[in-house]
Every structure is written in structure tokens, then in C-alpha cells.
Amino acid sequence: MQIFPSLLAADFARLADEAARVEGHADWLHFDVMDYAFVPNLTIGTPVLESLLKATTIPIDCHLMIEDPDRWAPSYAELGAGSVTFHAEASRAPLRTARTIRAAGARSGLALNPATPIEPFVDLLPAFDMVLVMTIEPGFGGQQFMDETLPKIRRVREAIGDREIWLQVDGGVTDDTIGRAAEAGADVFVAGSSVYGAPDPAAAVDRLRALALG
Ligand code: DX5
Ligand code: ZN
Image (cartoon, rainbow, N blue to C red; front, side, top):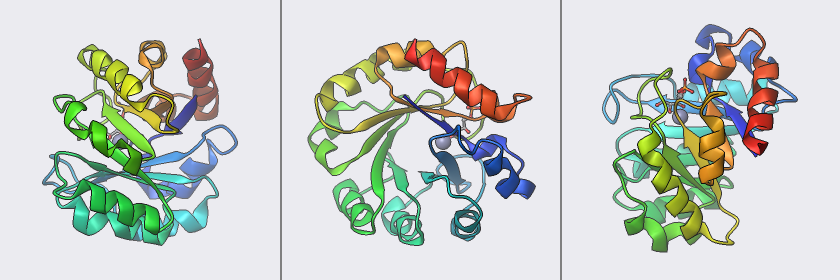
């Protein structure tokens, strides 16, 4: 059970300090990239990734909520992101993009919006190291966990079988919802507001992990 605090809920003017607040507790840092096109919001990209990689030893998990990830995803891997996840809805060549990410030395991730089924992608799973089931509509932090996505988490877990593929959930993960996601089969939990909105983010990470373990 791994907890990935989402920097979207951190102070973007003090990213190095915000990373340090969860060091030794967070397994990875989740880095949300938005482009005003795939989602109605704009965040950070490769220049900030480059700076952050120099400022922390925690591995960085890039979640690309962008159009044309086939063009842009490899650059995040080449810069040194440990994991690069792109959206199935936005990719025209998911297999090629996954291979390019891996060839650059990063883990490859496939993200599915709440309305996107896993079934058309089951045969592609060997090309991926992680599947991200969005448990909100992407674009903003602080939204409510969508219980409608629980059956899909179960189906993804079933499709993964005994492969070494992580199953990540992102959106609305809190003390109240993490148990349901874990029970459905998730093993990697992105948490934004429930970590950086807490008075002690490191303690929030530890508490979430304990609750995921049940
Ligand atoms: C939203 C991002 C999430 C966001 C989650 O589209 O992908 O990573 O930070 O925020 P919370 O945990 O507050 O729902
Ligand atoms: Zn995210």
C-alpha cells in the first residue's frame, strides 16, 4: 500500500519545502500536469519538474492530463520522472507511448477517466507498470470520491491478475474513502487535500496508509 501526496494541493511557490514535509513518509510525489485543453485547468510542466527533481530525493510520479501525450509524455521520462502516466482518452498510440516512456527509464502508466472502461485496454496491460483509475473527473483537487468507480477498480484488479502492475486511484481519497478503494483492489493512493490540507501532512500520510492496510 503506497501513498502518493499530490502537489496540486501544496503551495506551488514553495514546492521544495512541501516535498520535504512528507519525506520519509510519502512513497512518491504525485505531479499533476494540466494544459487548459484536456482539462479546464492549467498547472505545471517540464521546467518545474526539472527544478523539483534537483530539490527532492522522493521519486516523482507525473500524471499528464494533457492533449497529445504521445508527443509530450516522453520528455517527462527523459528528464528523470520515475513514472509517467497519460490518459487513454487522449492517446492515439498508447502502446508506442508506453514503450517510449519505458525506454527512457521510467515506469509507464495508463489513466482512465471515470467514464472510460478498462475492457478495450486489457490486451495492452503488459506495456504498463500502473493503471490509474480516476475516482473524480480530472481537473481539480478537493472533489468528492465517486463510488461509481468502485466496480471498475475491481475489474482492473481482476484483469491485472498476477502481473506486477500497480493499481492507482486519484481523487477524493480521504480517511473516509481510502478503505473502500483498497477493498476494491487499489494499492497506490494519490491524496491531495487530505495530505496538504492537514495540519501535519506526514502524519496524514501515515494514517492513510494504516487505513488502506485495514
Ligand atoms: C485532479 C488531480 C488529483 C488531485 C487530487 O485532477 O489528478 O491528483 O490532486 O486531489 P484530491 O486528493 O484533493 O481529490
Ligand atoms: Zn492526479
